[in-house]
Amino acid sequence: MVIPPPHRPPARLTDRFGRPLGSLRLSVTDRCNMRCGYCMPEESYVWLPRESLLSFEELDRVAGIFIGLGVGKVRLTGGEPLLRHNLPVLVRMLAARPGLSDLALTTNGILLGENAVRLRQAGLRRVTVSLDTLRAERMLAFARVSRHGDVLAGIEAARQVGFVGAGGGLKINSVIIRGFNDDEVGDLLEFARARGLELRFIEYMDVGGATRWRLEDVVTRAELLQTVTARFGTPEPVPDPAAPSAPAERFRLADGTSFGIIASVSAPFCATCDRSRVTADGTWLTCLYAERGVDLREAIRMGRSDNEIGDLIAARWRERNDRGAEARLALPDRGILYQVEGLREDPRREMHTRGG
Ligand code: SAM
Picture 1: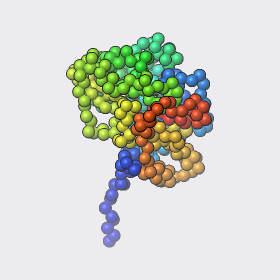
Picture 2: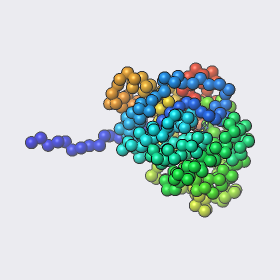
Picture 3: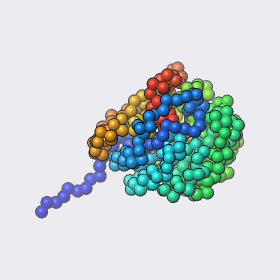
Picture 4: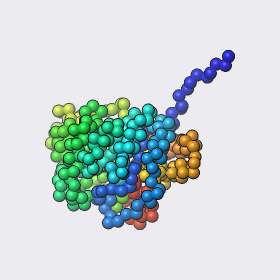
Protein backbone atom coordinates (compact mmCIF):
# COMPACT_ATOMS: atom_id res chain seq x y z
CA MET A 1 0.00 0.00 0.00
CA VAL A 2 1.29 3.45 -0.88
CA ILE A 3 1.09 5.85 2.04
CA PRO A 4 0.32 9.38 0.81
CA PRO A 5 2.78 12.03 1.97
CA PRO A 6 1.47 14.19 4.83
CA HIS A 7 -0.38 17.29 3.62
CA ARG A 8 1.81 20.35 3.92
CA PRO A 9 0.36 23.84 3.66
CA PRO A 10 2.11 25.89 0.95
CA ALA A 11 5.14 27.79 2.27
CA ARG A 12 4.30 31.39 3.12
CA LEU A 13 5.32 33.69 0.29
CA THR A 14 7.57 36.50 1.51
CA ASP A 15 9.69 39.17 -0.14
CA ARG A 16 13.37 39.97 0.39
CA PHE A 17 12.61 41.65 3.71
CA GLY A 18 10.40 38.82 4.93
CA ARG A 19 7.16 40.73 4.25
CA PRO A 20 4.24 38.48 3.30
CA LEU A 21 1.94 39.04 0.33
CA GLY A 22 -1.00 39.89 2.55
CA SER A 23 -3.34 42.47 1.09
CA LEU A 24 -4.37 43.62 -2.35
CA ARG A 25 -5.88 46.89 -3.56
CA LEU A 26 -7.89 46.26 -6.65
CA SER A 27 -8.63 49.36 -8.68
CA VAL A 28 -11.80 48.98 -10.74
CA THR A 29 -11.67 52.28 -12.63
CA ASP A 30 -9.39 55.26 -13.15
CA ARG A 31 -12.38 57.64 -13.45
CA CYS A 32 -13.39 59.88 -10.60
CA ASN A 33 -16.25 62.28 -9.94
CA MET A 34 -14.09 64.52 -7.73
CA ARG A 35 -11.00 66.56 -8.49
CA CYS A 36 -9.30 66.71 -5.08
CA GLY A 37 -6.36 69.10 -4.99
CA TYR A 38 -4.03 66.40 -3.61
CA CYS A 39 -4.87 63.82 -6.26
CA MET A 40 -6.41 65.24 -9.46
CA PRO A 41 -5.72 68.97 -9.60
CA GLU A 42 -5.26 69.22 -13.40
CA GLU A 43 -7.87 70.39 -15.91
CA SER A 44 -7.54 67.29 -18.09
CA TYR A 45 -6.27 63.71 -17.85
CA VAL A 46 -5.11 60.84 -20.04
CA TRP A 47 -7.49 57.95 -19.33
CA LEU A 48 -6.84 54.24 -19.65
CA PRO A 49 -8.37 52.90 -22.88
CA ARG A 50 -11.73 51.29 -22.09
CA GLU A 51 -10.87 48.00 -23.76
CA SER A 52 -7.84 47.68 -21.50
CA LEU A 53 -9.94 47.62 -18.30
CA LEU A 54 -10.26 44.23 -16.68
CA SER A 55 -13.77 42.77 -16.81
CA PHE A 56 -15.42 41.59 -13.56
CA GLU A 57 -14.51 38.02 -14.51
CA GLU A 58 -10.88 39.03 -15.01
CA LEU A 59 -10.78 41.02 -11.76
CA ASP A 60 -12.30 38.11 -9.86
CA ARG A 61 -9.81 35.73 -11.44
CA VAL A 62 -6.87 37.97 -10.52
CA ALA A 63 -8.17 38.20 -6.95
CA GLY A 64 -8.50 34.40 -6.86
CA ILE A 65 -4.88 33.93 -7.94
CA PHE A 66 -3.66 36.33 -5.24
CA ILE A 67 -5.84 34.63 -2.63
CA GLY A 68 -4.27 31.33 -3.64
CA LEU A 69 -0.86 32.88 -2.87
CA GLY A 70 -1.90 33.95 0.63
CA VAL A 71 -3.71 37.27 0.22
CA GLY A 72 -6.48 37.49 2.82
CA LYS A 73 -7.58 41.09 2.35
CA VAL A 74 -8.90 42.77 -0.77
CA ARG A 75 -9.88 46.43 -0.96
CA LEU A 76 -11.75 47.79 -3.99
CA THR A 77 -10.62 51.25 -4.96
CA GLY A 78 -10.04 53.53 -7.92
CA GLY A 79 -10.60 56.30 -9.16
CA GLU A 80 -14.03 56.24 -7.67
CA PRO A 81 -15.02 52.56 -7.54
CA LEU A 82 -18.76 53.29 -7.41
CA LEU A 83 -18.50 54.79 -10.89
CA ARG A 84 -17.90 51.26 -12.15
CA HIS A 85 -21.28 50.10 -13.40
CA ASN A 86 -22.85 47.35 -11.28
CA LEU A 87 -20.01 47.15 -8.74
CA PRO A 88 -22.13 45.06 -6.32
CA VAL A 89 -21.96 42.24 -8.90
CA LEU A 90 -18.17 42.13 -8.48
CA VAL A 91 -18.54 42.38 -4.71
CA ARG A 92 -20.79 39.31 -4.76
CA MET A 93 -18.25 37.35 -6.83
CA LEU A 94 -15.39 38.24 -4.48
CA ALA A 95 -17.39 37.75 -1.29
CA ALA A 96 -18.05 34.16 -2.38
CA ARG A 97 -14.31 33.34 -2.39
CA PRO A 98 -13.64 31.16 0.68
CA GLY A 99 -10.00 32.22 1.22
CA LEU A 100 -10.86 35.88 1.55
CA SER A 101 -11.13 37.02 5.16
CA ASP A 102 -11.65 40.73 4.52
CA LEU A 103 -13.33 42.52 1.61
CA ALA A 104 -13.48 46.32 1.81
CA LEU A 105 -14.26 49.35 -0.34
CA THR A 106 -12.78 52.84 -0.35
CA THR A 107 -15.09 55.51 -1.76
CA ASN A 108 -15.59 59.25 -1.79
CA GLY A 109 -19.17 58.56 -0.71
CA ILE A 110 -20.99 60.55 -3.41
CA LEU A 111 -22.75 57.45 -4.79
CA LEU A 112 -22.77 55.48 -1.54
CA GLY A 113 -26.34 56.42 -0.60
CA GLU A 114 -27.79 54.80 -3.71
CA ASN A 115 -25.51 51.74 -3.49
CA ALA A 116 -25.30 50.97 0.24
CA VAL A 117 -28.10 48.39 0.35
CA ARG A 118 -26.91 46.47 -2.72
CA LEU A 119 -23.30 46.48 -1.52
CA ARG A 120 -24.31 45.14 1.86
CA GLN A 121 -26.55 42.49 0.33
CA ALA A 122 -23.73 41.47 -2.01
CA GLY A 123 -21.55 40.65 1.00
CA LEU A 124 -19.45 43.76 1.58
CA ARG A 125 -18.63 44.19 5.27
CA ARG A 126 -16.29 47.17 5.40
CA VAL A 127 -16.41 50.62 3.83
CA THR A 128 -14.02 53.55 4.17
CA VAL A 129 -15.34 56.96 3.13
CA SER A 130 -12.97 59.80 2.31
CA LEU A 131 -14.17 62.99 3.97
CA ASP A 132 -11.66 65.83 4.24
CA THR A 133 -13.92 68.68 5.26
CA LEU A 134 -17.25 69.26 6.98
CA ARG A 135 -17.77 72.44 4.98
CA ALA A 136 -19.56 72.17 1.64
CA GLU A 137 -18.00 75.37 0.30
CA ARG A 138 -14.50 74.05 1.06
CA MET A 139 -15.18 70.83 -0.77
CA LEU A 140 -16.40 72.82 -3.75
CA ALA A 141 -13.23 74.94 -3.78
CA PHE A 142 -10.84 72.04 -3.13
CA ALA A 143 -12.41 69.14 -5.03
CA ARG A 144 -14.49 71.08 -7.57
CA VAL A 145 -17.70 69.27 -6.72
CA SER A 146 -20.80 70.47 -4.92
CA ARG A 147 -22.04 67.14 -3.55
CA HIS A 148 -21.04 67.40 0.08
CA GLY A 149 -24.62 66.62 1.12
CA ASP A 150 -24.52 63.38 -0.88
CA VAL A 151 -21.34 62.29 0.89
CA LEU A 152 -22.92 62.88 4.31
CA ALA A 153 -26.07 61.09 3.15
CA GLY A 154 -23.89 58.21 1.90
CA ILE A 155 -22.23 57.86 5.30
CA GLU A 156 -25.64 57.87 6.97
CA ALA A 157 -27.02 55.30 4.52
CA ALA A 158 -24.03 53.02 5.18
CA ARG A 159 -24.68 53.28 8.93
CA GLN A 160 -28.35 52.50 8.43
CA VAL A 161 -27.69 49.33 6.45
CA GLY A 162 -25.33 47.99 9.09
CA PHE A 163 -21.81 49.07 8.21
CA VAL A 164 -21.03 49.87 11.86
CA GLY A 165 -19.93 48.24 15.06
CA ALA A 166 -17.35 45.61 15.91
CA GLY A 167 -14.56 45.21 13.42
CA GLY A 168 -14.89 48.86 12.35
CA GLY A 169 -17.28 48.34 9.42
CA LEU A 170 -17.35 52.02 8.52
CA LYS A 171 -14.31 54.28 8.65
CA ILE A 172 -13.58 57.83 7.62
CA ASN A 173 -10.31 58.86 5.94
CA SER A 174 -9.25 62.50 6.19
CA VAL A 175 -6.16 63.84 4.45
CA ILE A 176 -5.05 66.91 6.39
CA ILE A 177 -3.30 69.71 4.50
CA ARG A 178 -1.99 72.93 5.96
CA GLY A 179 -4.05 75.90 4.91
CA PHE A 180 -6.90 73.74 3.60
CA ASN A 181 -8.43 71.78 6.47
CA ASP A 182 -5.90 71.75 9.33
CA ASP A 183 -8.38 73.81 11.37
CA GLU A 184 -10.91 70.93 11.10
CA VAL A 185 -8.87 68.18 12.79
CA GLY A 186 -10.91 68.36 16.00
CA ASP A 187 -14.26 68.82 14.21
CA LEU A 188 -13.68 65.83 11.94
CA LEU A 189 -12.81 63.67 14.93
CA GLU A 190 -15.89 64.94 16.74
CA PHE A 191 -18.02 64.14 13.67
CA ALA A 192 -16.76 60.55 13.66
CA ARG A 193 -16.98 60.20 17.45
CA ALA A 194 -20.61 61.33 17.50
CA ARG A 195 -21.50 58.62 14.96
CA GLY A 196 -19.44 55.79 16.43
CA LEU A 197 -17.11 55.71 13.40
CA GLU A 198 -13.33 55.39 13.37
CA LEU A 199 -11.49 58.26 11.75
CA ARG A 200 -8.04 57.96 10.24
CA PHE A 201 -5.99 61.07 9.63
CA ILE A 202 -3.72 60.67 6.61
CA GLU A 203 -0.58 62.69 6.03
CA TYR A 204 -0.54 64.45 2.66
CA MET A 205 1.63 62.27 0.41
CA ASP A 206 3.86 63.15 -2.52
CA VAL A 207 2.38 60.41 -4.69
CA GLY A 208 1.86 60.60 -8.46
CA GLY A 209 -0.96 63.04 -9.14
CA ALA A 210 -0.07 65.29 -6.21
CA THR A 211 1.55 67.90 -8.43
CA ARG A 212 0.89 70.72 -5.92
CA TRP A 213 2.59 68.85 -3.04
CA ARG A 214 4.96 70.77 -0.76
CA LEU A 215 6.63 69.38 2.34
CA GLU A 216 5.58 72.43 4.35
CA ASP A 217 1.90 71.64 3.67
CA VAL A 218 2.14 68.21 5.30
CA VAL A 219 0.52 68.16 8.74
CA THR A 220 2.57 65.51 10.48
CA ARG A 221 1.57 62.82 12.93
CA ALA A 222 3.21 64.83 15.74
CA GLU A 223 1.16 67.93 14.92
CA LEU A 224 -2.04 65.94 14.58
CA LEU A 225 -1.50 64.41 18.02
CA GLN A 226 -0.85 67.85 19.50
CA THR A 227 -4.08 69.24 18.05
CA VAL A 228 -6.12 66.25 19.20
CA THR A 229 -4.58 66.47 22.70
CA ALA A 230 -5.42 70.17 23.00
CA ARG A 231 -9.10 69.46 22.40
CA PHE A 232 -9.75 65.96 23.76
CA GLY A 233 -6.88 65.25 26.18
CA THR A 234 -3.88 62.99 25.63
CA PRO A 235 -4.83 59.97 23.50
CA GLU A 236 -3.52 56.59 24.54
CA PRO A 237 -1.73 54.44 21.91
CA VAL A 238 -3.57 51.21 21.10
CA PRO A 239 -1.13 48.59 19.82
CA ASP A 240 -2.78 45.96 17.65
CA PRO A 241 -0.62 42.80 17.66
CA ALA A 242 -3.25 41.08 15.48
CA ALA A 243 -2.63 43.58 12.65
CA PRO A 244 1.14 44.15 12.50
CA SER A 245 1.03 45.43 8.92
CA ALA A 246 -1.90 47.85 9.35
CA PRO A 247 -0.90 51.26 7.99
CA ALA A 248 -2.69 53.22 10.70
CA GLU A 249 -1.27 53.69 14.16
CA ARG A 250 -4.28 53.61 16.47
CA PHE A 251 -5.09 55.75 19.51
CA ARG A 252 -7.91 55.96 22.05
CA LEU A 253 -9.45 59.02 23.70
CA ALA A 254 -10.47 58.96 27.36
CA ASP A 255 -14.12 58.26 26.40
CA GLY A 256 -13.10 55.16 24.42
CA THR A 257 -13.25 56.75 20.95
CA SER A 258 -10.51 55.33 18.78
CA PHE A 259 -8.86 56.95 15.80
CA GLY A 260 -5.85 56.31 13.61
CA ILE A 261 -3.01 58.19 11.96
CA ILE A 262 -1.44 57.06 8.70
CA ALA A 263 1.94 58.77 8.83
CA SER A 264 3.23 57.70 5.40
CA VAL A 265 5.35 60.84 5.05
CA SER A 266 6.90 61.43 8.48
CA ALA A 267 6.97 57.80 9.74
CA PRO A 268 6.61 55.37 6.82
CA PHE A 269 5.54 51.79 7.50
CA CYS A 270 7.52 50.16 4.65
CA ALA A 271 9.09 47.66 7.08
CA THR A 272 5.76 45.91 7.57
CA CYS A 273 4.05 46.71 4.27
CA ASP A 274 2.29 43.64 2.90
CA ARG A 275 0.29 45.59 0.33
CA SER A 276 0.31 45.54 -3.42
CA ARG A 277 -2.10 46.97 -5.96
CA VAL A 278 -3.54 46.17 -9.34
CA THR A 279 -4.60 49.02 -11.63
CA ALA A 280 -7.91 48.83 -13.47
CA ASP A 281 -6.01 47.70 -16.58
CA GLY A 282 -4.29 44.87 -14.75
CA THR A 283 -0.86 46.31 -13.96
CA TRP A 284 0.43 44.91 -10.67
CA LEU A 285 2.50 47.28 -8.52
CA THR A 286 4.44 46.14 -5.48
CA CYS A 287 4.76 49.65 -3.98
CA LEU A 288 2.67 52.83 -4.15
CA TYR A 289 5.80 54.62 -5.35
CA ALA A 290 6.86 51.93 -7.86
CA GLU A 291 7.87 53.28 -11.25
CA ARG A 292 6.75 50.20 -13.16
CA GLY A 293 4.52 47.19 -12.67
CA VAL A 294 3.89 43.70 -14.01
CA ASP A 295 1.34 43.42 -16.83
CA LEU A 296 -1.12 40.77 -15.63
CA ARG A 297 -3.69 41.69 -18.28
CA GLU A 298 -1.41 40.50 -21.04
CA ALA A 299 -0.79 37.24 -19.20
CA ILE A 300 -4.54 36.75 -18.80
CA ARG A 301 -5.47 37.66 -22.35
CA MET A 302 -2.62 35.55 -23.79
CA GLY A 303 -4.31 32.53 -22.23
CA ARG A 304 -1.87 31.82 -19.39
CA SER A 305 -3.19 29.47 -16.72
CA ASP A 306 -3.80 30.49 -13.09
CA ASN A 307 -0.71 28.50 -12.09
CA GLU A 308 1.46 30.27 -14.63
CA ILE A 309 0.22 33.69 -13.54
CA GLY A 310 0.62 32.68 -9.89
CA ASP A 311 4.24 31.70 -10.59
CA LEU A 312 4.86 35.06 -12.24
CA ILE A 313 3.47 36.89 -9.20
CA ALA A 314 5.33 34.70 -6.70
CA ALA A 315 8.66 35.16 -8.50
CA ARG A 316 8.24 38.95 -8.51
CA TRP A 317 7.17 39.05 -4.85
CA ARG A 318 10.21 37.02 -3.75
CA GLU A 319 12.38 39.66 -5.42
CA ARG A 320 10.48 42.61 -3.94
CA ASN A 321 12.69 45.06 -2.08
CA ASP A 322 10.60 48.25 -2.41
CA ARG A 323 10.68 50.72 0.45
CA GLY A 324 9.29 53.64 -1.53
CA ALA A 325 8.08 55.89 1.29
CA GLU A 326 11.32 55.44 3.23
CA ALA A 327 13.35 56.30 0.14
CA ARG A 328 11.29 59.50 -0.24
CA LEU A 329 11.86 60.37 3.43
CA ALA A 330 15.63 60.01 2.96
CA LEU A 331 15.73 62.59 0.15
CA PRO A 332 17.47 65.82 1.15
CA ASP A 333 15.28 67.91 -1.18
CA ARG A 334 11.86 66.41 -1.31
CA GLY A 335 9.60 67.73 -4.07
CA ILE A 336 6.80 66.29 -6.18
CA LEU A 337 7.23 62.77 -7.52
CA TYR A 338 6.28 63.47 -11.16
CA GLN A 339 5.81 66.54 -13.30
CA VAL A 340 2.51 66.65 -15.22
CA GLU A 341 4.27 65.57 -18.43
CA GLY A 342 5.54 62.42 -16.70
CA LEU A 343 2.02 61.59 -15.56
CA ARG A 344 0.60 62.14 -19.06
CA GLU A 345 3.28 59.86 -20.50
CA ASP A 346 2.16 57.00 -18.26
CA PRO A 347 -1.21 57.44 -16.51
CA ARG A 348 -0.43 54.38 -14.35
CA ARG A 349 1.74 56.71 -12.30
CA GLU A 350 -1.38 58.57 -11.16
CA MET A 351 -2.76 57.88 -7.70
CA HIS A 352 -6.28 57.74 -9.15
CA THR A 353 -5.11 54.95 -11.50
CA ARG A 354 -3.09 52.87 -9.06
CA GLY A 355 -5.66 53.28 -6.29
CA GLY A 356 -5.12 54.77 -2.85
N1 SAM B 1 -12.24 57.63 -4.79
C1 SAM B 1 -12.02 56.84 -3.62
C2 SAM B 1 -11.85 57.72 -2.40
O1 SAM B 1 -11.97 58.93 -2.53
O2 SAM B 1 -11.65 57.19 -1.32
C3 SAM B 1 -10.88 55.85 -3.73
C4 SAM B 1 -9.61 56.27 -4.41
S1 SAM B 1 -8.69 57.50 -3.56
C5 SAM B 1 -7.28 57.64 -4.62
C6 SAM B 1 -8.12 56.61 -2.16
C7 SAM B 1 -7.56 57.41 -1.02
O3 SAM B 1 -6.36 58.01 -1.43
C8 SAM B 1 -8.47 58.51 -0.49
O4 SAM B 1 -8.68 58.34 0.88
C9 SAM B 1 -7.66 59.75 -0.76
O5 SAM B 1 -7.89 60.72 0.21
C10 SAM B 1 -6.25 59.23 -0.74
N2 SAM B 1 -5.28 60.10 -1.41
C11 SAM B 1 -5.24 60.48 -2.71
N3 SAM B 1 -4.20 61.31 -2.94
C12 SAM B 1 -3.55 61.45 -1.75
C13 SAM B 1 -2.40 62.17 -1.33
N4 SAM B 1 -1.70 62.94 -2.16
N5 SAM B 1 -2.02 62.06 -0.04
C14 SAM B 1 -2.70 61.29 0.82
N6 SAM B 1 -3.81 60.59 0.50
C15 SAM B 1 -4.23 60.67 -0.79
